[in-house]
Length: 197
Image (cartoon, rainbow, N blue to C red; front, side, top):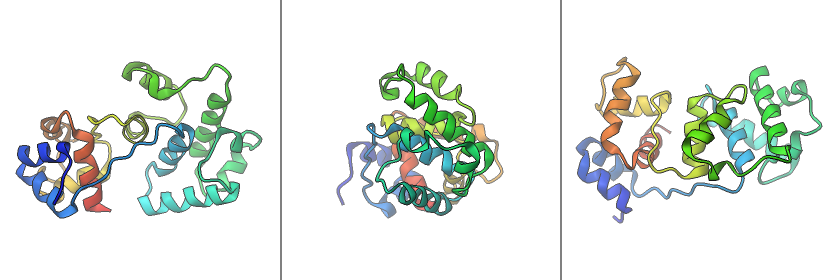
C-alpha cells in the first residue's frame, strides 16, 4: 500500500498509530483555502453535535440557497431567528450572522494569509468561535500540517480505542501524547477521525 511521506513518518514513529494507519490506508488531505466562509460555517454547525447531524444541516442549508459553497451574501438579509430555522441553536445562528458581517466588510482579507497569532486573534474575537473551531479552520482551510485538538471528542475517543491514552484521562494527557507526532499532527488526526467515523 502506498502512503504519503507524512504517513510513513508517523508509521515509523508510533506502533499504535501505525496499526490505525494500516487499517485506514492512505488518506488524501485536501484543504480548501478558497471558500473560507463556507468552511467556517461548516465548522460552526459541527460544534457539539455528531458528524452525521452536522452534515445533514450543512447540506440542507446549501440546498436551500442552491449553492455548492455558502457565501456571506447568502446570510446578508437574514436575521438571527431566520438562520436559526435551519436547525441551529441561537448561539450558532448568531455566530454565522456575525461571520457573514465580517466577510462582507470591505476591509476583510484572506485569513489563510495571516500568521498563526493574527488568525487566532481575528477568529477568537467572533462570538461563538473558540480554540477548537480555530484548530478546525487551520486544518481544513489553511492546511496546517501540525494541528491537534484535545478538545475534540472524536480524537480522544480514537486514542482511547487504540490504547494510546486511558479513558477519562485529563485532556492535557492527549496533547502530551500527540506532541510526538509533530510536525504531522494533522495527518495523525485525520486517521484518528476516520477510525471513529
